[in-house]
Image 1 (cartoon, one colour):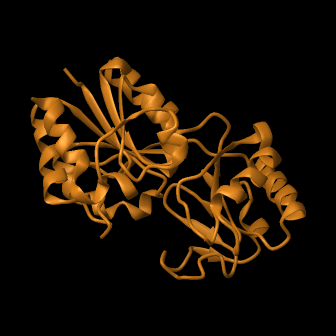
Image 2 (cartoon, one colour):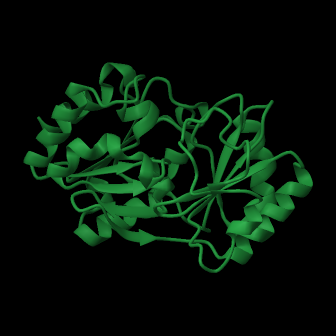
Amino acid sequence: MIALIATDLDGTFLGADKLPSAENTEAMFAAADAGVHVVFATGRPYRWLTVLDPFRPIHPTLLASNGVVSVNAATGKVLHDLYMTPQTVAGIVCDVRQALPHALFCTEEATQWFSEEGFDRWQISGPPDGEGQIESFLGDDHRIVKLLVRTFGFPSDELFQIVKPIVGDRGTVSLSATMTDSLVEIAGRGVSKGSALKQVCDDLGIDPADAAAFGDMPNDLTMLETVGHPYIVSGAHPVLRDRGFAIIGNHDESAVGRKVRALLD
């Protein structure tokens, strides 16, 4: 019997319209009714998770910013925020700037964010809590849970290959979206969806072997490797497809919901 179900959001649980389908929603409520704990694990910051408000009655755990922030969905209370020291972030910014002079930066905290002008050039995130040279938001009064690096003109996979060795063991570099305007995310050392999910399992007394997880991007890899029942959608990144995970179908056709129902039978 599956005791816990964890799923990524964009490209996995959410459809192309960025909303959960009725079938996916009903499946998660059915899982909760069967005593299965539900976890939503996403690269999105907590402030972008209002799409999950309808799930509050089933008391899921929210793992935001790739597991850096964990939230009690029923109350909205931030349970943990695994922040990086300002000195570490400043050092990474300096080194990345040397390699990529035109890179732009953004810092995420548990409930607010700060960016350099032009970082969100499509203006899809709403106004930041502060805008300017990112170094001005690296003081001791800022609990930075994630540093984002953005460049324009080459893909995210290429940016990832440049930034990862620069960061080294100072943090965890992740790739959560494939786009022409490249974006990579940096969290604290050893922090990932997998480590956060393992902590949830420990807290609940659940063996990860009895958990299922769903994903589509490289930032889901540690989570998929943590559980006994890993699944990916048909549009998953080659990094995941090459691992041989079971493919469940298209994210825009409620593949997660259908598989959850099958696991409950």
